Length: 212
Image 1 (cartoon, rainbow, N blue to C red):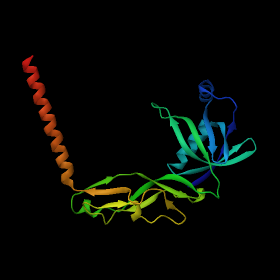
Image 2 (image 1 turned 90 degrees about the horizontal axis):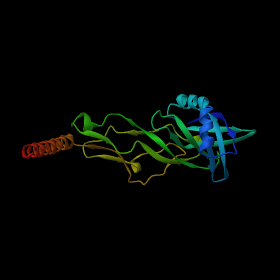
Image 3 (image 1 turned 90 degrees about the vertical axis):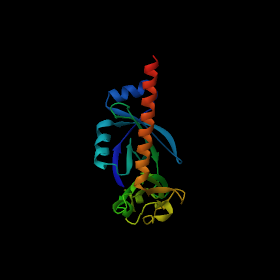
Image 4 (image 1 turned 30 degrees about the horizontal axis):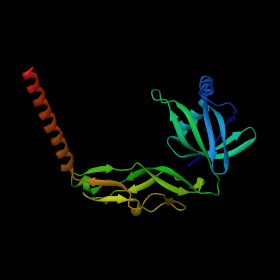
């Protein structure tokens, strides 16, 4: 987790027309809300925000939003992106306090090589790429490491099998599966079944063509 200052301008005008004008001016429409904060419409410099996101490289960011003499700590709750060019269209900021725990999703990082893959030809399946945690904002880890070295074919790792970092608790059901190793024959059987279906469909099309 990294802390970064970000200038934000409070705005009173809202709506699609206003949002379009902001984007043309190189700004991103945003909103700040939270349990102890009245919703506030904001605008953010797009160039400055994009630089921060590139620097963070996927790491969780806690922002100090500087707004006309006021400061608020906030996390990104949601980013709305353009479906074609992936540019940020809107930001939802969630106001937080350094004294109150928050629930966030953090990436899972696999460590080691599963023996079921290395020795038995199994296939590693990652069921979840993130895991929900609860902790103080300043204690949010960059990632949760999951050691998969001892996973054999048929084994799985669940949330209850992990030890969270100090000051962090998991906000998932204990039996939530994160990663598993399945037999390599499963994948081969699926491919064979797909090929059989394709052959059957091809034969049916050929018969239809003959009837015509």
